[in-house]
Length: 400
Ligand SMILES: [Zn+2]
Image (cartoon, rainbow, N blue to C red):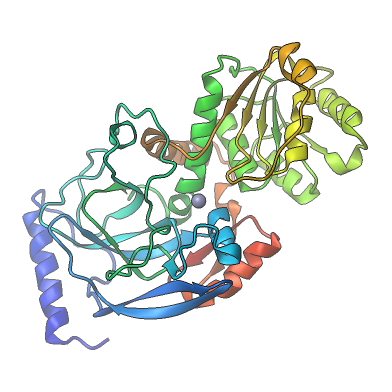
């Protein structure tokens, strides 16, 4: 790469900035020369991204420029790619991203959890602050971040570097940012989807029914169900039965910590399926169930797996998947089921997720294998097509 005077100036400025950061911070690990332009994958029409080049933006006193290392493709991205339900086109998507700080404004000292920030640190973002104290207070947070702005789901503007499907992103003042330098790249890419499950398990715990020795059924073994099992396992819950229609996913569920698995394709009708789940628990119905599919029929079925006085957490309907039929007398009232719904996460759950990822690795769960496919940024259209075929689990864009 050519070192012109602008580049040299940028490098000198960064070194000076890192020295002024106090604490004798070490030089950033990566190549710190910042190019004059950045590249983004912009969704310009349905099922088509174009790689676009834009000038590197100014970094304001409260801003952070991040060189992106990778970003997972989420179900939300798949919906946008296919149908643009949020009417965002043209848009730079990608909200499960992470990268390295290459430049930051003089006012940036700490992350949203109070941890020091310096050049070379690896970061993730969560939401962009709005004037809603219930979702912006890190410690006293009560409300989930649903409806808040996040990078990767923002309308295009004059900065353009608004999503993680790019090589650089500008994190603007007023955004949440977390220093996650102690996590490896794959763990960092999994933070956002894992936070969804940390939140769901926290919701489940509010019922008082989920305990150390509970019998738990997890229905649906896509990334969400698999991560759910991993979290239960790190909490010490071992009596887990996984339900899915694909043997490959059920096998993976066992490696993630499920004790037994039930393939619903092997059992005709809900009575037989419920019996199979009961058999897997040595003749007992489940104390608690997590519904992790987007199928209305699966919602209707899951009540049949749960004992009288048991609990249910429904988290499969991230978007509207239609109506489900239940029998309020048999399914809810007479069984006295305690039901909680769960959607996205709170800021607090986001920080809890970092510890979960370390613990999951610590007990040897194969979290890394959730990322089944990796593509470079210029193959992002191919990556999304692979995602739509639902052959893998988590598909990630990795910048080399
Ligand atoms: Zn997501």
